[in-house]
Length: 423
Image (cartoon, rainbow, N blue to C red; front, side, top):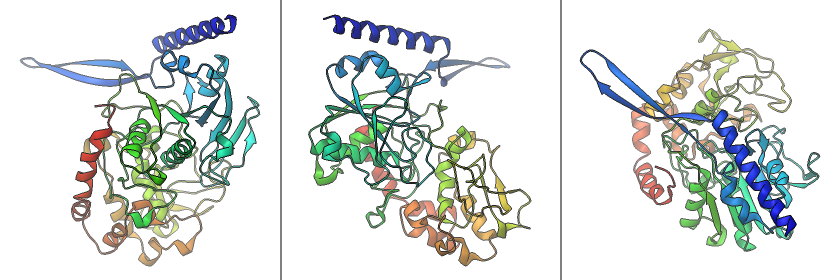
């Protein structure tokens, strides 16, 4: 009885503390703009709304964790206030028995694409199982001492960003072992639009598992419902899920992430440019890996004389140890001051940058040639179809390319409606 009372008191105190913190230093976002026309002036009233992530709403799920052995799929974005959700829940007396880390690891100190080994988290002493190393799916042994799995990771709403693949693997493993997954949902910073070709099943890979567009317009919780509802889990299993939804959120609201989602997405600028600029990983152009401003610049040595702006990729531990065009001046586009309101207005990938840089490239045979560097990705797998590369090469216009994405996009948008948790 004493332990139960202590647990309840701790939960209540932390919840009150979080609410007080939210009141004094809330994450604010513009929710609505109402205007009243006057004779010669226009007055505006802007309302501000406090967004509360699923993790922050401890009062909604702490009682559900009582008496259970908890596994947590987390990374540095898994925060409650300024603490990790692991540390916060441990302070509340939650019995966390295992941590599962995705790409970049639980503490986020591994570079993109680098395999991470199992370890013991030095701060908590809890075993940390890597889902980006020897295996991407929790094993039966991994789950043997777990009663409930918590998934709490910030996504950025793009098909080739690997955390939604981790979600699928976790759901498949838990469904097979009859374990429930509690999803602490978070906003999607790119959730205000949907764009790009639908993934061709022949191009399924580690950067694309399901038939969704490049920019999918879903939160993690909504995507989990789609995985179940469309029968996309292995052997068409259904995973038992419980979702703590985000308070005061809708897909059109701007949302600035409080923590960088991965080492090379270190600014809001990079997060909103990422859906377009990551396509250039399948080209012989640098996207700024090896600089302190990745995914905000584009360039290559061969574009000298075509563009005045230049940058030089260097080896940076934890971000890019061997970046493309290392120690070579790259000439191209500086998008660090690009007006992000244009992305919100257009709600589209910027194909003009891809077309313009291909047209400016002197030796066009090199542009998509993956044999030139192991640091290049597969453009077709990034795009999700075989046609986009050929359309660029053949000189198709943006309008012609976009027309080819229909009716796939329309069909996807209709299907998506079934799984939405937010307007």
